[in-house]
Amino acid sequence: MDFIEYFKVPKAAKIIDVGGGDSFLVDHLLALGYEDITVLDISEVAIDKAKERLGNLAKKVKWIIADIANFKSSQKYDVWHDRAAFHFLTEKKEIQNYIDATKQGITIEGILIIGTFSEDGPKKCSRIDITNYSQDSLNNLMKDSFKNVKSIYVDHKTPFNTVQNFVFSGFKKI
Picture: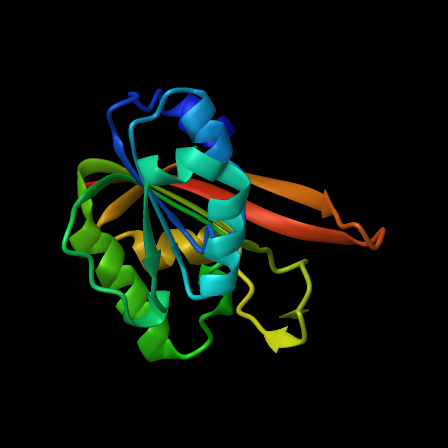
């Protein structure tokens, strides 16, 4: 939400939350009056949990069950938000497909907000291998189509009392 506020995203912006599943970002966006929200996740179970939690508000959201490694958007978004889906892509082809999807799926001057495990973060998540990133490595991947506007590192304390370091970057499409 800090990045959404930082970029002064208008309420009518088309927003996609990639890997959003059962995340609470959609709840916060709806509460703030955002009107065009899409949530994409590979897990139908996670999406169903979010729908159940939201009740009638779920009808205001577009829901997509898809693997982001192969996703091709038929729509252009003003904001592409991804907290912790991108780092699950470990194959070069998957990573390139994702980058291509952002290039195709984000409007000119649109915003890409991406959060991944940093180089100091864990090497696995839920026993699944991940790819770790730094601000510089994310910038290098995105530099052909996006300009980095803001990056921060965040220590996230888990329910298991461990700390996971993330890098969050906000880009503008050029």
